[in-house]
Every structure is written in structure tokens, then in C-alpha cells.
Length: 245
Image 1 (cartoon, rainbow, N blue to C red):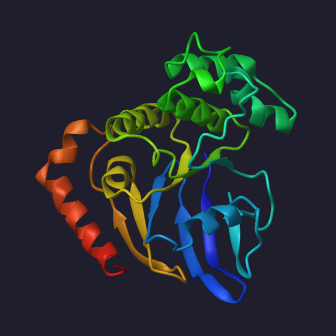
Image 2: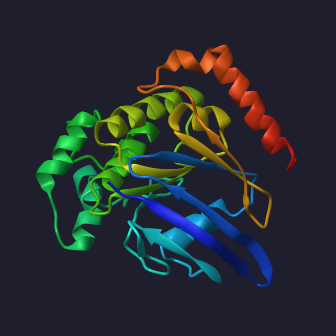
């Protein structure tokens, strides 16, 4: 299990402040979602956690150890699957392991079977549907050596029904090992359905505007999406985000 802490993180570009003394944490086995207005710095935050940028101030810790400015500490999935077109499904899935110098083909094959891609191991990305590409990208993140997952709007390009299927699939996989997850989305329904906690960021420069602890028990069922309690929570979060409109 893995925990992450963000402590007084600040970052600016060309004199414009993007993040301002941002602090929050993700506990072991927790699924935390970031919501915020467009351009509030959510992708910048992920780049800082991944070590692609160094903050102006503040510190990022993983399991109590500083990873500020260090790459290779987390598993990251961007908005698009980013599969290499010249590599097969199994070759794409193993890419993260190859970069670390240690591959576990049996584990990768087990995950492929569990996620409904059995029989497509030797297929190329051009032969897959959008949902299948997303699954392959998820498997690549899940079998990577890093135990903390950062997922940056991974379902944003999918249609509504495929998106819901992928959300249910993600929960079914996540429930088995409860990896620590930091998830970014613009979709309130998605945040409520998936998360233990939701962190709402303010407009730029981003600070923690408010936190919501999601009350729905796990495992989550699709029918909660139309329950009165779910719609009540959705309304409250929507009103919080409306302050930035």
C-alpha cells in the first residue's frame, strides 16, 4: 500500500501562479478525485507529482519519503491511451516493466484475461475499440512497478455508455487490491461513483476549495447513480463548482 502527501505546493509559469500553497493527502488504499474548473492546474499537479516539473515551493512525499522533482515514482495514465502503434497489446502492457528492467509476463497475461482482452494479446492498437485501448493502458499502469496510480481524465474521450462500463470495470479491478489512486475528472457523477473523497480546487491559482467525503458503501452499484442521495450530493458539488463559472 502507498500514501501520498502534497505539502504547501506552489508553481508558476512565466510569472503566472498556477498552484498556490496546495496541500492534501491520499491515504493507503484510498481513491481520491480532483475536481476543478478548466485551467485550474490539475494537469500541472500531475506533472509535479510525476517529477516532470519541479515546484517553486513545497514538497511531495510518497510513503513519507520526498519524491519532489523525481521521476519514476508513480504510475501515470494520461487522457489518451498513448499506446505505441507498432507494439502489440502485450508489448504495450509490458512497456513500463521493461523500462524498469524487470518484466513479469505471467502477471500481465493474468491482467489481460481479467480485463476481457484475452485473445487480443497480439493485436495492435489500430485493431482495438476505444474501450479496449483504455483497458490496455490501464493494465500497463496497474502492472507497472510503481504502486501509486495517477489517472488524468482517462474516460473523457469515451461515449456515455462506454464510459460507465469502464468506470464499473475500473472499480471491479481496483476493489481487488485497493491501490492508492489520485484521479482527475470534470464529471461529477464519475467522481461520486468512483471516489472515497473528492477535492474541489479553486480557480487559478489553485488551492483546496473544499473536500467531500463520499458516503456510499463499497462495492458500488450502478443503481446509486439515480438515487436521491446521489443526486443531492451531485447538486451540492455542482453548486460548489458554480462559484467559478
